[in-house]
Image 1 (cartoon, rainbow, N blue to C red):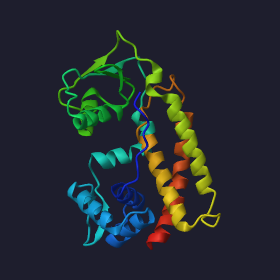
Image 2: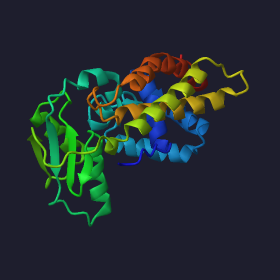
Image 3: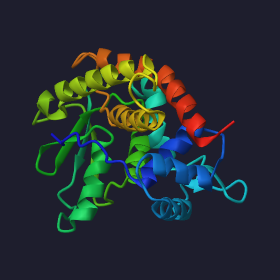
Image 4: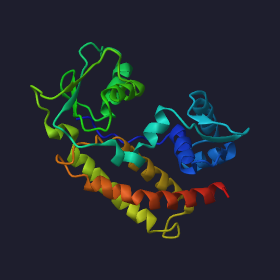
Length: 264
């Protein structure tokens, strides 16, 4: 089972997350610098991150000195995946998707990590060496699955199959469902505390902003990387409850952040 390593906050993620919350509202370069300052990053680091994100095509400038997220691309699609999770699954027919990676070199660790992450982001686990598998219950055609895996970084040498029977059945604990459900529960508790409190409850507004962004990043990451296994394997109640909290949580965090950034 791949570890659930939560992402560390970086200038790059601060910009992407703040612009995600802003949605269609463009934020100025000073606002992005201010958001970095709130999170403990220097303005120079924020300028470099802004420039690199623009070069990578992840953010766009509608007017000089203003920025918003690019409308299309793999990152933005993955970032917003949690908002449509219920649409991404279908009834499981006891069939499987299998990825065989014997032809993929592991000598370049960076390339292998990108390849492995692509499979992991679509719920594949390594049941045996070079044998990755997941239930075929995602609401995707086989060509759509291949396109998404390729866009995420799966190596071209991979062989992917649709199977109705397996000679080696994966163990359910490979997906770490209990660990992920514990994470969903812990995040839900944090979110409940945040949306029921105010910065005057002992925290400064800046501290509250930091807390909202960090917890929001963890929650979105946890939801976006959920393997979406068949419901008969492990009930989705913890995921559903966390999802139910997200609209109010985002609205509360957005209001607080916009006050700090001076967004009208």
